[in-house]
Length: 90
Image 1 (cartoon, helix red, strand yellow):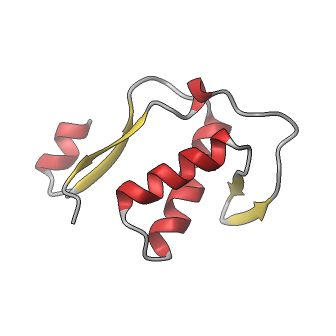
Image 2: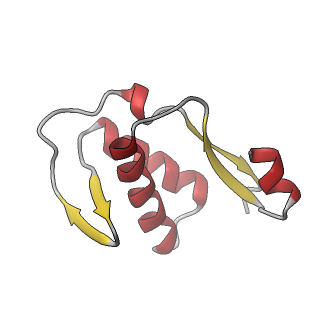
């Protein structure tokens, strides 16, 4: 998939190295996109999102609704650590 997106012109692609759970993936990507939208570089945004997951400071988003808060238990790195950024780091 990464190669197809790059061939189609995507400069940067965030992919997962293994299958991840929907809730953890949605939380990570919500935080990632919030950081990018705020002007943070993609690599730093991914780092901040993963650090937030590590420290249980996640943002959960469903259908555009974003609610900040803590989840009852830590999200194991298996569910979010496989995300990597490929592409240019402008």
